[in-house]
Length: 486
Image (cartoon, rainbow, N blue to C red; front, side):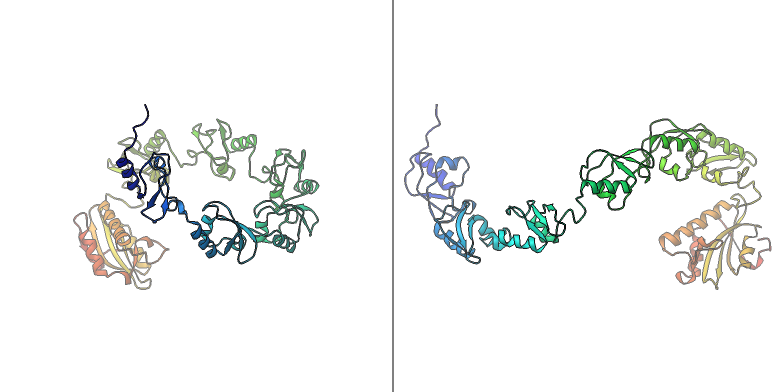
């Protein structure tokens, strides 16, 4: 069965809903229906079937359509005169440009958008005589008719006499364009001599200046593929002799000479290369680029990394018994001194930096000891215009050293444990640097990291802050009562 026929009322309702008022009764969906567009007021004849399929009823309102009178007025505004009847809004219309007098073909839709009808006047098209004159002015004699601005145009270069094919657009932008004169195009014999001068012997025919040309290096005998255009700029022809590429066998020999044996094929200069250290027999992954520059190939032998069993042996050699598994090189590691029995924390980095046999700081005869009475002091140096906060074990002679260097002792606080004094010192320095953003007063000499400029903070404010942040009870000591040993 066919579709149900529309009634007059249904057809009129559909037409009016599309913005059109009918002038005659409805016949059928395929017959043009005389009507009036309610948007532009023009008389139109849409087909109801097209409207129901989604088409616009008014061709004038749809896609910029205009009447012939409107088209003539618009064409005049775009500086053109017609030489044939109006063919349609988007159809080429033969006209004459009112400015340059050329015969042109205009699409009214494009002319309306740009405001000009003539592509010659807009610079979008070129007159063949004018562009030929331009090419000659740039020492290029055209050998064929002009096609378009971006198409290759066969010409004879008036400088070197060779044929070349630049586009008009390039000549307009950059002037004389000849690949032979610019040395981007080369005669095969010329190209061969350029590679021979770079100490490689070309094989086969010349493929072009920007294509790799199979050759043999006269120095190392390897097969290479240099580009003549690149070599012509002074860059070496052999990537191996120039150090830009590494032979896999040579790379292996370099690794063996540095004490590691590769376990896999050469992965590239900057990639980790799985190897076995021939000294400690551990598996490591150094990069060839680093090893060839003199870097140690084994992080274990270079003491940059340690395995848990080795870390435990080092701790035991310093009379420190680990109380927990090895946590890593920089993480705190709980250990117990096998001499004094005190539990403390250390790191592999600290143990690695200590002298052989040095372990618990409380048992050594040198260095800061966290388990003995300790002073926190505030000192002043007028000559350096600086204050300094510091710590010193009682009887260590550290403050005596400061006095000899021109510092004046202003405040001294005694703590029973050096660890409490250390925490207070570090918290005070952190407060000065991170919260108050005060930099050091100077940047060289003993203890400069704990200094501040006197102009940056009041002394009493600094002292009160230090006293209020003390992590344990303390005793304030008169500076005059300090002994020479302090």
